[in-house]
Length: 144
Image 1 (cartoon, helix red, strand yellow):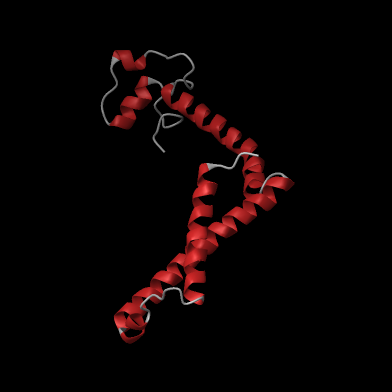
Image 2: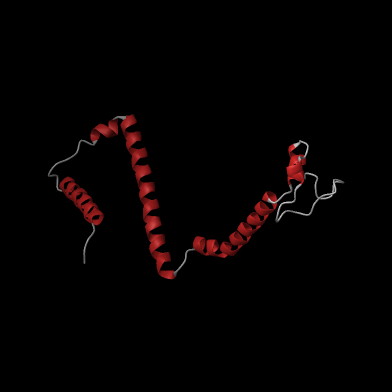
């Protein structure tokens, strides 16, 4: 079994921390913690920093555990919801493509009227795939 570099790195960090803790317990050496107890700003800074690091560590441990638990069962609830939405997204994509095709296929006369200019002869020519020609009476040619 091959152990990865990151795993070895973290094993090394934990080992160093255990050695320092054992040295503190056996009074081999002691860190000057009394300085932190008597200085209020140092104490508050230390407390806040340790709290933040503990919360970040707890989040990472939670992510790791949840991914390990769900990876053995199959898809996570989020992934299941995304799979259920897949047909709906496909249907919406088809609808958008249909609307884009209709907009591209508008007769030039309608587009000119919507743009607020007079239609030219080129605008009056029918375009393939466009909607039915308008008689100018407001049916099918007026903007929404």
